[in-house]
Image (cartoon, rainbow, N blue to C red; front, side, top):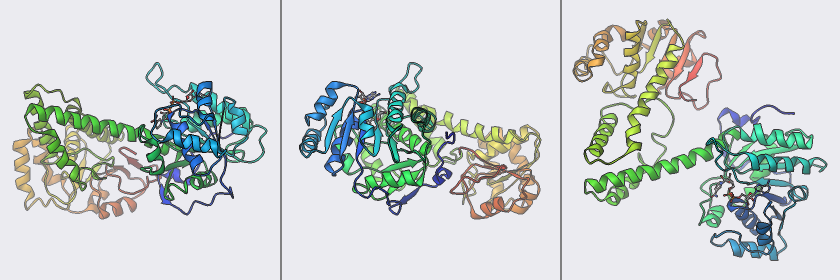
Amino acid sequence: MSNSAGALETDKQTWVRTADIINSEFATKPSISVIGLGYVGAVSVACFANLGFRMVGADVVQAKVDSISKGQSPIVEEGLGELLNDGVTRGLIHATTDVEAAVRETDITFLSVGTPTAADGGCDMTYVRAAAQAIGRAIKDKPGYHLVVMRCSVPPGTTMSVVVPEVEQASGKDLDTGFGVCFNPEFLREGVAVKDFYNPPKTVIGASSERAAAHLAGVYRLIDDKVLLCSITGAEMVKYIDNVWHAAKVTFANEVGRLCKAVEVDSHEVMNIFVEDTKLNLSPYYLKPGFAFGGSCLPKEVRAVEHLAQAYQIHTPLFDSLMRSNKLQIEEGLRMIRNFPGKRVGFLGVAFKCDTDDLRESPALELMAAMLEEDREFCAFDPNLQVEKSARSHFDYMRHARPHLAKLMDQLPEVLLPSIEQVVNNCDVLVVSHARDDYRDAVRMRPENIHVIDLVRLFPNRLDEATYHGISW
Ligand SMILES: NC(=O)c1ccc[n+]([C@@H]2O[C@H](COP(=O)([O-])OP(=O)(O)OC[C@H]3O[C@@H](n4cnc5c(N)ncnc54)[C@H](O)[C@@H]3O)[C@@H](O)[C@H]2O)c1
């Protein structure tokens, strides 16, 4: 029996957008069973049948099965009734309460049972487990390879630690030889689910093997020939993070709205302009995990907006949480450094970001100030801080504006070394807070006993080295 989590190469964080993988061993359209005929399951049955797949829907609720069997929608969803009716008329849709029979007579099984909130706030796996056991019993004596496609929203790890063991135990078959497994999150929006099905925002497949990925990519070929392949756990997490992001956007907009109304500004005027900015506002920019924000604008303006809201007695808990969360990221960086007690620390990057000499609210300075407090030996390099030139005036400004950093400012001229090499030669732990090619080279070529704390994700893939430590990966 397997005990590994997500064996596919893509576990190494390298998802690829590819059409090449579509090389399914199913010569014709595979038949598909769908366990759980709720919003997700009913839409899948109707829409895949419309694309010519033979579909068998299975649910423990007789009324849902009856409804689908008659070509009627069990839910309110535009266009769904017509598609179901068409599929039943063409003989492509059947429904049953016999879950095992549905699995036995198909090539692929989509699992879309409910995953409600459990009593402890977690995810209730009762239905997932029951359905996985039924799949296992069904494929026990079924010849050939069967593909199980998990579509429920679940915590990362569930597919490999709950679904796969249940199927393996009930079937006596092994993952990848007896059956394959994919996690394929569903992104439909209720109300426009049919339209979303044919025009998905993305198609994500986390697979246990290339073979499993190829099967499922083949199924999606008619809708999306550029699927995003990733690890199973990555696909599970994407679904959660997408929804948290949507919730964050709604909450953000509503806090903007409450504040704008209080200060008598039209929130829609503001947000209509806000969404026009697809370079910085609605873009990948600022959306990759890394180190804390700093600089002359973000912290100052966040504090100003918090203050404004307080003055008008408007509650903005999302805005209020930003500085707290940012501080936690700095503390996380410190915690990582403190994992190496007594070791000499070298900082690559001092200013608040790359390509500037601006020290204002630089999070790297907070780390260095802590080193000073703790009497740790440390040094630093930043190509934009030439002590003899402009940096002196920055130090003076910082002494005045950030009194808690005054001691560090006094020390900085001695701490700053003139080259990356000198920092590397004088430290045991290298803390990198700017993503620059010369820092990447220094990390790659460092003596092997030097640990690296990467605060900026220097490389696309996580370095697989015992001495490399990423702050949030
Ligand atoms: N509703 C959405 O818009 C949406 C979107 C994306 C993902 N999801 C996720 O997809 C999953 C399904 O969501 P939903 O809204 O369709 O759920 P739902 O509650 O509407 O439907 C689940 C169905 O599963 C059936 N079921 C439960 N146990 C079963 C079993 N052992 N065998 C057969 N059928 C069984 C139930 O009777 C029910 O009809 C959830 O994990 C959900 O979080 C939902």
